[in-house]
Length: 386
Image (tube, rainbow, N blue to C red; front, side, top):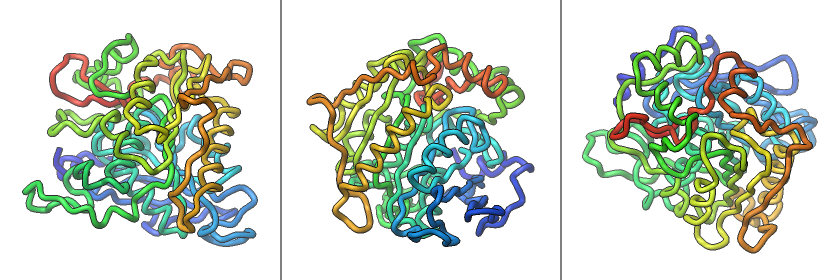
């Protein structure tokens, strides 16, 4: 997909905020509009750690000493959605938080490519977090966002040269289209820890009824109309060319960056073979898998207790990090095979079909279109949703 095609579809309702950010009334919170490497405008928000210092000061420690968590929502999500705000609120008890809307979602420009060029949006958000003074950055993604954080960690991490180039137009890409890419220029967009929740392992998955509905939304003209009008998500009409690195292909390239994979046994979109495939792809001891009993799909299903445990896991990676600028250690696996099973049903985690969850929580939405987004008709197309 070309950058000009993305810019062509930018909505007129992008919030009129300055590139440098708009500061909220209290605590250093701010909103801004970022520009991805292919020119698409991305709305973003910064929330300082509760009771701590932020870019505007006022706390016992400046931003350099405090970590920041960048949250990547699922398909049909946005930074203003209640579930995303809840995630940010829980994480803000432990770190500063950056939320943003992927292209085609919320107040961002462009159209959704269902997990392909969205890696550029995440890179822009991570760069912004570092520009605010934070030296330690973690990325947490849900469903489609989960697939994006995995690809981003590979494409912008220590093994970037093996992962290949980001989409055309990204930092380190060749402007002449020759295919010769450099890896310099990606360092400021790197992450120091990764958490993928409800992420797919592979593209073009159509093995569940919710994913077949997702494919209908992203590949059919009527489905895209439903996406735009009913789900407030603008979806690109072009197929992937080339097909991006899949999540399971990205995982081996993430280490030594700590990686946590979280998945529910009641996920109606991606069954347990997806997280198990992701774990199996990681080098020995390089990733951890939590299989959560009773957990449904993505941010709408994740309760505050599980979010708190994820926050604690991230705090553990930062505490064990021997490097002053972040990006070192990892938390200890609670079981020899790195798999945990937790029961969050008592904590209010919803276990129903995530498609129904989205509809009830945010109106007519299909957040099920998660990161594995596939093409229901087979063949080419976009394979990641959610």
